[in-house]
Structure formats: structure tokens, C-alpha cells
Amino acid sequence: MQPRNAFRHIVTLFLALTLLAAPLWAQSQPQLPDPGRTSLSREQQEQVGLQAVGEVYRQMPVLPDSHPVSQYVQQLGRKLQGVIPAEHTWPYQFHVIPQKEINAFALPGGPIFVNIGTIQAAENEAQLAGVLAHEMSHVYMQHSAKQMAKAQWTGLFAGLAGAVLPQSGLGSLARMGIQFGAGSVLMKYSRTDEAQADQVGAIVMYRAGYNPKAMADFFVTLEKKYGRGGPQFLSDHPNPGNRELAIEKEIQPWPQKQYLPSSSAFAQARQNAGSVRAYSSQEIAQGAKQGVWAQQNRKSGATPPNLSGGNGQVADVSMRQVQPSGTFARATFSGLSIGYPQNWKTAGNSSSFVIAPQEGVLQSGIAYGVLINAAPNARGSLDQATEQILASIEKDNPGTRTSGEIKTIDVDGVEGRSVLLSGTSPLQQGGQALPERDWVVTFEHPRGGLIYMVFVSPERDFSQLRATYQRMLDSVMLQ
Image 1 (cartoon, rainbow, N blue to C red):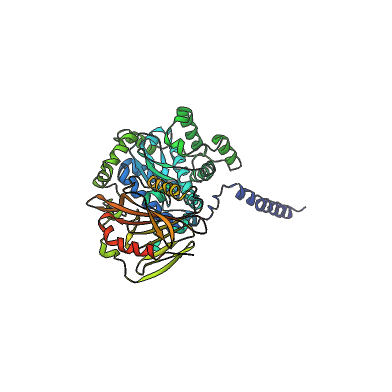
Image 2 (cartoon, rainbow, N blue to C red):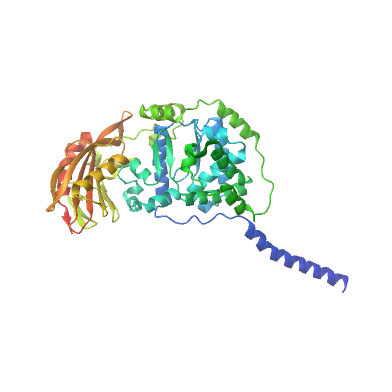
């Protein structure tokens, strides 16, 4: 073989091997999975997240974004976010709560909060990056939205400018696995959710240059140190199995790389965290009852400006803004039709329906309007089913209680039950929540199943709306 031909042969062979090897190399690179679909749009998830953020700043202390510890966490979070493809990323936010206990949580749409205690518990930057990557992955995979879809509340987001329409702000969040209480935010994820967040978080860490095993190391360290009675973080993030083994198996086929060492910025942030006045969960819970944190967050500048004008309060709505029209239209819902003021809006699905004025629907819940719900699986007598409905409403809406006797009422010739409730309106005046009056009506549909209606208004305006609400009830026609 001539030297020139031999050289050409070698080059051809080299190119062929290179082309064959390229796909194999590409396949071994970890790629973020398709997050799937939910019935909630991005805008709706971000709306729920904004609603939840408002609750965080009312019920918990938060460090201002200008604080050195907050700035470090934001810098680390942005580094992780940078490896997520633009078509699947979210408007992530990163905030720090001055709380002693170890915890971190992610809200729909991107807000992520991490406790000071978590920063102090992390042994290196990779472990803290693992916590953030794990939380970011819950948002990426839309776990809260998927949980709400399972609860069949997704139809409530149609119409009314995408506002949140379940029974109350806290009730709607609870249906997405988000609960406020005991000085913390409780997120309820399944073990399948946790396994997915581990897998996706490992990919995010790897692509950002961190050892994915550090995420499992942090969880395992907490489990060994605290056991089953450990921090809320372990309760919210149940172990899907052997985390270390699962992650090691996940990363085994990935190309080996030199991982980033822990930075001096992490060491400085950890030192700064030690000088922050941190609170226990009991102190935070007590402060929330007294309204301390809403005021403190506003004063420190921690409350974001997009939360109700930056003062943490919900603007008042006047009766003039929601005044019902004397002209009625009709809407059909799950075996009944009902008349309603023509200038009000409707939204819902086969299990839940809302009729409300545009201005009466806020980020934190419904201030004016009517909620109609079907409970096809209600058990027992009408009285027993009514008691179950009232108990559910009181559970989902802390502070709500029965304020009168349960009376018999007629709904299109069918016997029903009527009771008044007192509670807290999403409207505020002078920084204080207004009292709310709810009128609950329950009845059994002739074709089976229970229907219950909740007429909502601030207590101050209920008497003016009572005639309209009564006219709506009298207009009900069962089909």
C-alpha cells in the first residue's frame, strides 16, 4: 500500500470511528426528562405559587434578598437554573427563612425557600446545591400541580382571569399538598415524587458541575442523625428507597468529570448564617398568630413588591365594585341550572362551580360569590352528610365555625339544610382581615349525590347581598 493511500485509509477509519463513537457519547450524557403535562397552565401554577408566597410572608420571617446569605443562595440557585433548557425552566426564586430547624420547600411556579438551619447543616456547597436542585426538580416535574389534578380541582382555574377559585386560599393550597402550620410550610410528596426529584436533581447537579451523590449524602446524614423523629424536611421528603444506591446507579453510565470543590463563598455564607437571629418553629408559629412576621417582613423590605403593592396586605374591595346586576343570566352545573347576576362571571367543571364578580376573586381566595360543589360519594343521611361538609370546610379554612343552628330549607321542592358560618375574609382593612359570613346550603339531588352551595361575603356586606343570594337559590332548577 502506498504511503499516501495508507494515510487516507487511516484518516477514513478515524473519521468512521469518530462518527460511530459520537452517538454513544451523546447518549451517555444525562438529559433532563420531559416533565409531562398537567391540566394547569404555567400561568395558573405561577398564580398559585404567588398566592402561597403571600402566605409565607404573612406567616414566617424571611431574610431580605439584600442579605449576604440570601444573595449567596440566589447565586447558587441561578447557577443550577442555568443548566435547565429554556423551554422547561421556571421563574425560580430563592429565599432564606431564619429558622433553626432543617427544612426547604418549593412552591408551584418556582419560589423556593431554604431555612438557615439547612445551610448550617450542609457540610459543603455540593450538599446545599443538592437540596436546591431537589426542590427545583419538584417544580420542574410539576408535582404540586399533578397532585391537585388528582384531586380533580383543576377545572376551577378556567375563567375569571386565571384567578384561584376553590373554597379558600388555604383550602386550595392544601389540595396541592401545601399546608401552613406549626411554624413551617408542610409539603406532602409521594415516594414516587421523591424518586423523580432525586433523579432530576442529580442531572441538574451533574450538569452544573456538582457531584450528584452529595444530595443523597445530605439526606442520609439527616436520617442517621435524627432517625424517624427527625426534622420536617425528612417528613416532607419521604425516602423513596436507598437514595445512595439509586443515585449511584443513575450516574454510573455518565461520563466521568472533575466535580467542583466547595467554594469559599459557601464557607462565608455558612459563617454569616451563624450570626443571623434564627427562630424555632414554635416561635414562628406564635409570631404568626400575632401578625409579627407580616409587619417585620414589610419593615425589613423582605416582602416582594409584587405581593399586593409590596405591603403584604390585600386591597379592600368596595360593595360598589361587586354590586350584582338585577338582570339574571342562567348557568348549568351537574344536574341543575341556576340564575345569577348578569355582570358576574362563571367558571368550573362537573364537580365544582363558581359564580362571582371579577373584583371579588383575589389571589388569596374568594371574597364575594357562590361556590357550588358536587359530592357524589357522600355517605349517610342528609344531616350526616351536612355535618361532614361543615367539618371539611372548617378544616380547610382555619378559624371558620358554625354561627347558628342548622335549619331545614326547600330547594326546588327538595328538602335541604341551611346554616351560617363565620370566618375570615381574604380582604383586609388597615392590615387586619375582615370578618366573613358564609351561608351553606346542602341538599340531595333526586338522581343521587349531595350538592352543597356556599354563598360568600364579608360580614359587613352580607345583608346587602342576602336578597341576591336568596334569589339565586330560589332560581335553582334540578334536572
